[in-house]
Image (cartoon, rainbow, N blue to C red):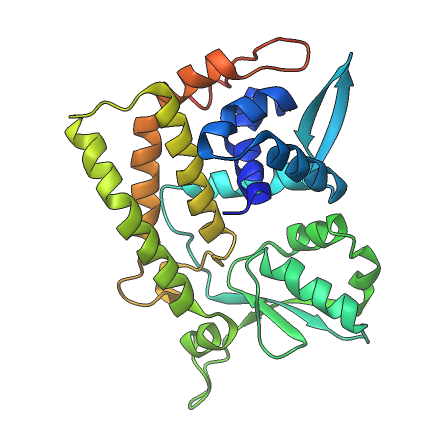
Length: 286
């Protein structure tokens, strides 16, 4: 488990609902039971700040850490996916981003990675596709990723199937643009790992204490968000039969709901800002 990735998950799930900032000493106390020692946490936080995932705001001799706007945007999108009641509908049109100008190898790789995190698949090296992405939002995200100078070399299009006999199908598009089998295996692994946890919580024979509820919540959301970052969020009509993503989402939601109250009690006692204040959780969370 990478400490930096886990810390980002904590910021997205536990820190944002309490105002988006936390004192480093408080973060250390919260995460030490996961066997992340103080030195590793400090090193990881400093690296995340250097990589512009986090930013700092001093308060006297202490310092609060906050997610950057781009980091916050990613986690708000992930939260929307977790709590969505239904899979997205499809208007049967494809959103395409074509490269029509020369890109350096570095620009091309940066563009590919940035669009991947937005759910786009690649057909060859010059065509990126998605069935439902909002293209203006996608371009705004590219600007936020430092790719504003590349936009003049990209052509966004919305395309409909001409339905010519013998041509490739929508499912052929999906197969060419994404490796859904790998993602399905990851979702199935998540279900196998956490289904027994839900069974124990339902039985209630060993009531989970507040600290354990918080730690389990951290690991649950960390594992699930790692999947969301790789999920293009395709409509059901384009997914293979028996797709495990929906089962994983419902499983995550129920476990999270059962852990929320005791885990928030733990945060009420141990979450602290640099000035000593403990902010309340957003009513929307509870």
